[in-house]
Amino acid sequence: MEQTVTLTGAKRFKDTVEGKPYDSTTIYCLLGMDTSTGNSAGQAGAEYKWGLSTNYEKIAPLLHKGPVRAVLVLEQVTSGKVLKTIVTDVRPITEPVKAS
Image (cartoon, rainbow, N blue to C red; front, side, top):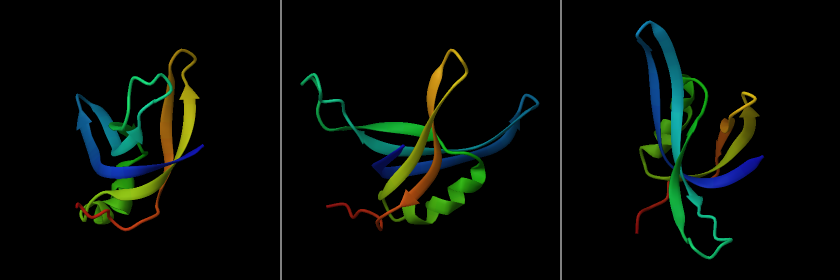
């Protein structure tokens, strides 16, 4: 599934903590609120894991200039008990959004 969002930030982490290696990129974006009940409006921030820390280099140069519109390629996976959404690709579609 694909979703167009405003990508607002990214963070990478690669280290060993208490003997366990970690290597990831987290992206931050704005998503539209669920307006189906009439009790919410606008946008809220969301975060997703996006693979290894090397993914950070793919989008950091754009984000240094400001938020960017992008298409997220999403996949839902489960452990059998917990359902989660992961990002398998990020495709920027605009130059950084200028603050007004």
